[in-house]
Image (cartoon, rainbow, N blue to C red; front, side, top):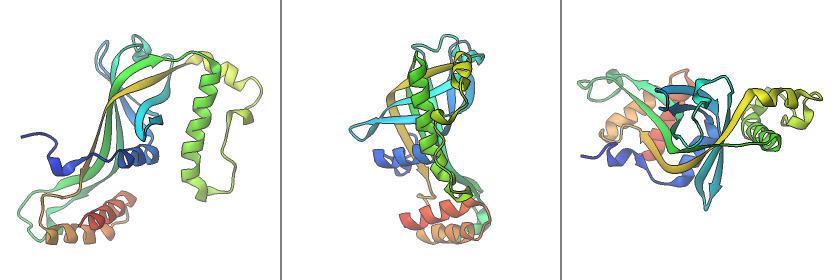
Length: 210
């Protein structure tokens, strides 16, 4: 039996890219020098409609920077998730679980030199993330050109910038696919009454998949 089960696998690259864009703050896993993880935002560059490379940076003091060039790495983008109680199904005899979506990227890290590349990465991160908070107020997207004179130059020596050359992408969407329709509708109805944004988002995804 393969894992994850086939119904939970999403092969549409556009869906994976959508999740990666909406949830760019991902877990960055490395194993050189021992297993480590840091949560950082990533910019995704595409080729032919598929993820080709990820761009990011770390604090230069982070132990993950040592030996990073050429290392095999894993990046996990977490989408919406929610607990599902057995009480919310038509059949209440099976235990509780979590429904969720995620994208896991495997690849090879390469260090990147140059302050211009750093400026471009920060500008691209701002252009990706700041519009997601547009309801806070009418502000232009922050760009490095708005920084105080010398700020970027002072910051640059204290970061390590890198790319991840993408070698594999796997998206998992666990939305109660193995359950009868009546159970899935009941779960969606209960989640839609929850005050948690993720729960309501999962409810809508379950309804769309029915």
